[in-house]
Picture (cartoon, rainbow over the protein chains, first blue to last red):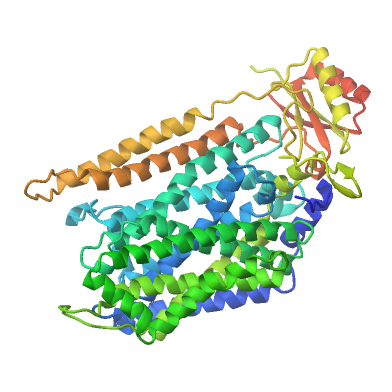
Length: 459
Length: 177
């Protein structure tokens, strides 16, 4: 990193704990706003429970609509955290330091949102979901059928959620000790308990370093399996021909990384705007994630292209019917164009420019654009796959989301924002110890010609 | 009956790593044992050996292996048990369907490995620590602490060593027996 701002420990504490130990003016109204929106979604859910799933736009043959689209979308976003955190940790990329925790926390809240979208809301009668997962209702002979993708899915998502949450908690211990040392009374007691009596011995630091690498190495294979299994929810369905694709697993994974890394970049910009952390999160960090996004987006586009090639190469009627629906039929055609532009053709050319990659506003706009596109991508796969406008289909149908569904989808976004803001009020959203580690030994600069540059990039 | 122990900490201002290393050497020369009697406390992870301390030994890598084995077994029992208890008999196919079993066993293996790793990190870090011992809040502000926990008759000598080494402040801590 050429743009290195050298701070001492006290300055890092002051900057990053200012809003944990105090409360910014905007925080309470913002949290209340998101809470109200979330509760509105909760009310819509209650109404649906009372009246039944008939209040949604779901009907034959499109029985998966906004809820499942939202489920896949949030699982995708959740891939941000571990992708950024684990891969950058393992490669010891210096620019990871301010990003890792926000990315991991985004993972945790996105996963809870995904769980809300699918098993809780989508099933219509959520109390039955408990019988499908654990404990099994032995008395009524309820056992999971391990052949079903819907059993693989909760096992993968719950493993990922548990791993991500523990990852966040372990890396929080040193920072909790810093807050413990800066609080009094009840808060001091609570943080003392939470940090487990952390003191900062060489053994504890060594274990932290090893834990970061070891947990990253263990979570990465889970991260790959989660979206593979989510893709198999579709790819192994016997009845929906448009979803039968061997490329679905890697296509879904790279799509998830595309939307997830974009979401992390959005969060980075919000962190600078809301918390004024420009000394910690510099344009250099945005530049680095922008470059990464160009690569990720282009691999995703290649996978998208291949998915189309494989579909058209077979010349099978169901595949052709699905593609025709996506590209030539109103209103899907418009959505398809918006999807392509927002997911790739607008942001990627923009990221080619250094000025855009280093600009907070443009990075915010382009990364939000990616996620609008990626949400539409999932919509076009799921809903149009089920619509099956083709010969010899018993039902031809379409899908119109109801206000109840729209409210519940918006509520999941509010939940993630609410969760992130509450987390950032109680715990530091940037790992202080990681930032301080990056400052140890600095600043050493050497002059080459007329330019002064950092003498070394230390890890 | 255990001998009564006392604890003391010498704190050094930030950027005095050399002085801290000298203090650690002096304690070693004074007959104190590293890790069990004295250790350095920092608010920042320093590169290993900056203070002349020994490399901490740990057995963390065993935990994920044990966890993975446990998770694998649970996955195997769960998937085979449910299929044997409620068999879906299909002509020409085995009762136990291996591919879906592999998926759940894989997740079980990874979950077991991760849970045991986290457990290992906590145990190997010697946490939770119920009593803080001699401690100074300035450590998380960049100061460096050298703490000595030893028998009552040896604490005065340790205090003297830390003073002579140039500690900026000294604090007595709790007693344990």
